[in-house]
Amino acid sequence: MLTQADVRVYWDSIEPGLREIKNQAKPEWRPEDIYSVLLNGIAELYIDIEQKPCESFIILQEKPNIFQPSKSLLIWVAYDKRGKAADQYMDYIEQMAREKGCNKIEFWTPWISLAEALTIRGYKVTNYLTEKEI
Image 1 (tube, rainbow, N blue to C red):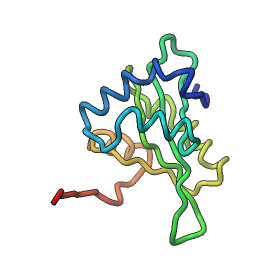
Image 2 (image 1 turned 180 degrees about the horizontal axis):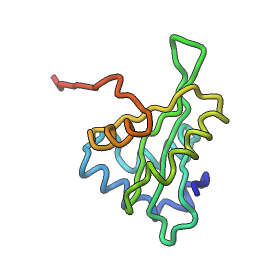
Image 3 (image 1 turned 30 degrees about the vertical axis):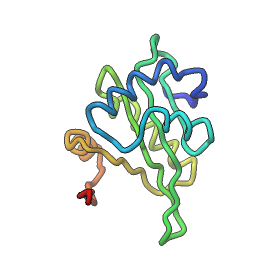
């Protein structure tokens, strides 16, 4: 089960997973940025405390909708060394979103396989992010 955790306590456990994601997906953030946003309460860290060592974690944020009086639960980072995280945790995350007053959950991912895995659970791909640096 996922439990909200203090990044200062679990940093050594989650940093290798963040570096793995950074190397594979090439996001704009650095692991140190993640530490900072967690420490400053901009985002929240959830870990599976039943795992020893900790190999599953999620970093999320409540995100207001600027056009409607609503908010989303944005999953910034989802890491599970074992795989099958959607099957393991999505019901819990959906309940958490409801309890936080969110009307939807969002994922930003470079991996089409994650998007496809979530469509099986009722999620729709609504946008693609395309970029060109100039």
